[in-house]
Amino acid sequence: MSTETSALQQSNLLRRVWAKPYGRISITFILLIALSALFADWIAPFDPNELDTENIFSRPKGKHYFGTDDLGRDLFSRVLHGGQIALIMAFASAAIAMIVGVIWGFIAAQFGGWLDEILMRTVDAFLAIPIILLALILIAALGTDIPILALVIGLILAPATARIARSSVLSELQLDYCNAATTLGTPRLRILFREVMPNTMPVLIARAVICAADTIIIEASLSFVGLGINPPQASWGSLVRTGYEQLFNGYWLVLFPAIFILLAIWSLNSLGDQILDVLDPRSES
Amino acid sequence: MKETVLEVKNLEIDIQRKGSTPLEAVRGVNFSLAKGERLGIVGESGSGKSLTALSIMRLLHSPYEIRGEILFNGQDLSLLKDSEMARVRAQDLGMVYQDPTSSLNPVFTVGEQIIEAIQLAEDVSDKDARDRAIKLLEEVGVTDAKNRIDEYPHQFSGGMRQRVMVAMAISTNPKLLIADEPTTALDVTTQARVIDLLNRIVEERNIAVILITHDLGVASSFCDRLAVMYGGKIIEEGAIGEVIKEPLHPYSKALVNSICTMTMDVSSPISAIGGQPPTLLSIPSGCTFHPRCPVAIQSLCDVKIPNLEIVSQGRKASCHLLEKSR
Image (cartoon, rainbow over all chains, first blue to last red):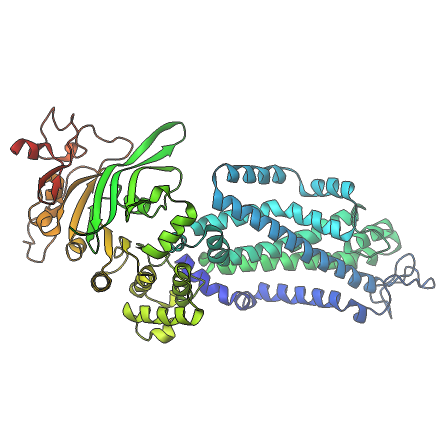
């Protein structure tokens, strides 16, 4: 039955997530954040790096919605532009994690044997190291350009993705349609990517969404400890960091970027959960 | 003498185990199949009938180890390269599976799946393949095939899905069709219809069939010849009518006796075969059936393995008692 229902559910996945209250809230937040980041250049009232020395540490009021920092830069504009970096990073890292992880897991599942053993023990080895620690080491070695950062975070998220991809493929390979495809003379890789992959899409989509959330956490954490995006470029993590250093000059310096981080991560994680929930037949009443 | 399509010689299938002796799941199976002939293989769960079928298709990978020859049109399938085997599967072999809910891919329409089957075997344009797919669906009794071809498997009932499977299996005019318990997951009336369908299609196209089943009723209404498997071996083989009317091996006798019929006396209990089928972990010595056999001879049946002897024209059985009575 599960194969049958998953096909039904897949066609209107988004609609069914939207039907759930939490699904609707998270999709709304994600869209708001994404749109505000996309159109930051038009929405933001100031240039994010424009100095307004007459208004240092201004409270959130008047033309400065979120207040200003030690150099009089408009925090609202900086948060929106920081969102751009979060968006680009989330997209790029999730894509890298999915491409690498899916190929990794699919190959392990399809070929099995010693290759599976090697690939999966490598996954275990990666998962044994704390993510942030691994990221710190790699960033320290490779540098902190945005492309490198995206690549590193993507690669760090790939092993867990590989494990998810492998298990979802294995459960599909059990089903007769894969054997049936073989008896029709379909080549193995074609079965894997054309027949099996569409059936694992829902799980993979949920994983991609959660990868995006993880990317934002990792990027913010790295920036917070000074190994992520470098000032003066605004990212949510570096905003929280500079704000933290000047906490006694203005609570808003930490509060607003932190709210954005919180909202983005919560809504992405919640969306991922809702997708998995919709796919799980047991959650149906 | 009719042309032989398939010849299986000394097929043995072991299941390899880490740090332990392999399990012998199939132990020396021999049979052949003429063009257009229909062989039924019956047996209990674990008797090796499905493994035999899967090994012909070369669908068994490790931990299964296969020995022996599987000659298809005189060509040993086990020696072919993967790509060559894929071509043979695409063009000359067809297979129908037990569970119609899982044997079709849920994310593609039935049309796409049949069309793919056709195009894997032959170089056909999309439009021609689609026309052929519609004809095939009509042939297997899907009404309104023109519209239903664009529907997904979940929009079909179990019996209809099995018809689609049959359509896919015969789409390339195979020479051999293997049906692995094609009716087990269907209700009785649908069962009869699917068997009728197979009967008609196989007749028209002159396809040789191996029907794996544990239902003697299904086998008797479809097959020409019957092979009874027990504990990884064929213990009796012969024309279907003869085997059912006059079984030679004590196991086949017991099987035939346990069939329910409409004319049975309801007050008398249905006869069952006592004991448990052998597990692969401990295959009995001598004749595999001797622990459950009502007529087993001590210090013969439990020691010596009986051979599958030719009893009469086209009739084989492996039992010490038969050898003695001759």
